[in-house]
Image (cartoon, rainbow, N blue to C red):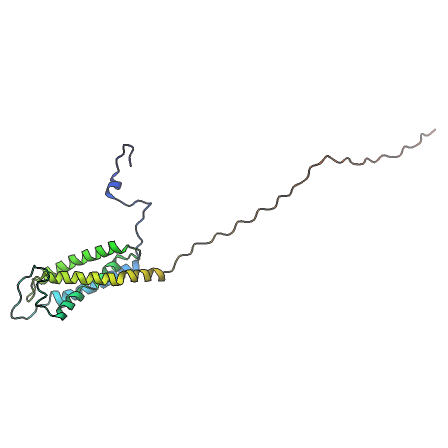
Amino acid sequence: MQRDGTRTRDERSGARTRNRPAAAVHRPLRTAGLAGLTCHLALVLWLVVLRPLPVPWVYDTNLTPLASLRSSTGWQVVGEFLLLAPLGVLLPLAGGRLRAPWLPSFLRTTGASALLATGLEFLSSWTPGHVLNVDHILLAVIGVAITHLALVPGLRRLLRDRRPRVRMPVPAPAPAPAPKVTTLVGPPVARARAYAEPTPPTR
């Protein structure tokens, strides 16, 4: 804050200061999350998105939410739920933060999964046998959201409890002050003077 009452550029942009440091990132968890996220997306691309389907005919493009559920079987709906459900755990794990609040983490996870599901659905529409279906995106995001709410808060709490806590060194107790010795100051004591006996005069 300047003298004229205006805010500085860092204050207007909401930049963190030294008084409010960012949450610590757990490096091993982040590495494991990125590796798992990469493997899962590569598996989905190879087995589902980029694999052509040898079918004689396909449905039309569906842009109406929940319109294709009438013609889908229960196994197909469950498969759409589980297709991207691991992202509910892998995305927060890739962040590597153990003390993130649950609501911002939930919103970030569902938003990122919606973007990924939309991109995969558009990519699969170019593969023979696949058509663009908005219900696939909705079911995938719902599966990610349920997985996140069911597993991530409990796993974070468990990892925080199992993480070894750093013990602060206990300071040594201060030595007790030495007792003060009080000396009584009194009048000086006169010392006894030694007088030699007088010798008689010699004649």
